[in-house]
Image (tube, rainbow, N blue to C red; front, side, top):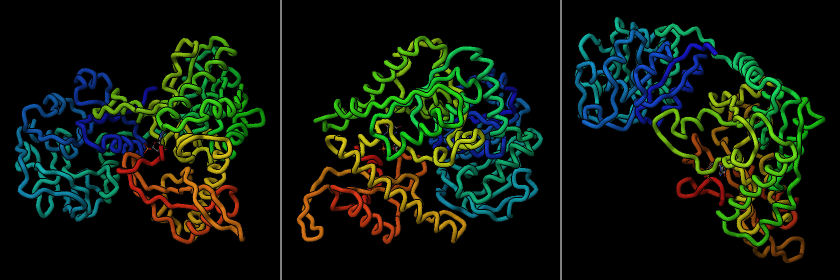
Length: 524
Ligand code: XMP
């Protein structure tokens, strides 16, 4: 695909992926590379622009990440952000040192509106600052284009050489006009036409899959999650019956979920593919009987998935391609793209390639961010409830039932979860209809779990000795940290009374207030 591209050079900042996402929101394709990437490689990519990210170091120290001066002489526009801004000035002969006043948080910035970066930006605008060093003297040839009360150089530039530096973070939403600044850079300074659109992505991806696959056979483990569903839809459009999707119902899915997945991808759905649903509930429950230790449960569920899939794959025989729903954050986080190498500890189908007889892996979504995967899903005609599905762990309800998993406990947690999610969705919908936006308490993930604790209650005139269900709702940006969402009390009360009345075996409902850390989002 001959796609105009901006590249982000990552110096270890926490917002590296955010920068790339914001650029893509300007309809410009963007990829992240480590600062260790060779200049020749960068030249070969022929980017329309280069953005240097923030980072935790001080650029004037010996071992800090840096980049050769050549980068600034390629004639390609460069935008430095925070550490990137300091580095640009430092490498080109300016001075960076410890700031007399450290700036952190939302800060008033006075900008020079004649700078191409600040076109249509208010003269005084709120920006997100987070730095302890500052540019005390711009590099020769640079002019100052923004300042704050404490920071004399909040931005500077040398438009002749197409070099721009910003001390604050335009990529975070707290910088009110940040998106406009990035738009000004990629569209006006770099001259990108803005051709990165999901409809053309889908069209191109279908074409590429067809070319690559030819008349070969493709196998996909479909979990019903967003990524694998979108991938299934894409492959279905591209190669139809050459695709076989194997969907393992491990009996630990949310209520009705198995049927929903079958409804969309099965014989009654709108795609003409081979769809295999394996009802492996009993097998899983048998393996899990008597097991209480969380890691052991996870392991059993993961291994059993591989066994079931392996059996199905054997029936199908050799395939040419195994399709995987890898997406861009997986690529960046596994250290192949950016700088911050975090290996995912729980990749759901991680072990699969070792057990399936195939020639090659295809990963058509590997360049997309999650929100782009969703947009592609809508383009492909998937229903909203699939596309906007909450994150759901591979081991499913197995890790939302504390202690031993049994069919009856699965029923309890499925029913309670269904009630809870419906009530939260209903309240959120009413709020949206009244106010035109999501309520401030809108959680990013919300679900019920079974505590495995039983206690005494009274129902009618009868003594009960039943389970306690916990409901949880968290607000989070990256799922690495989270806080409990303030679901309105009346919603929780309705949930409590419906769960106790409608779900047999439950006589108490707890609301989980724990943030992460110290808690995790899931219970096990
Ligand atoms: P924790 O419990 O670690 O969860 O705070 C963070 C996020 O990851 C999801 N999660 C998983 N996702 N396989 C997954 O694909 C797993 O084994 C798994 N465990 C947790 C969890 O739902 C939350 O969104």
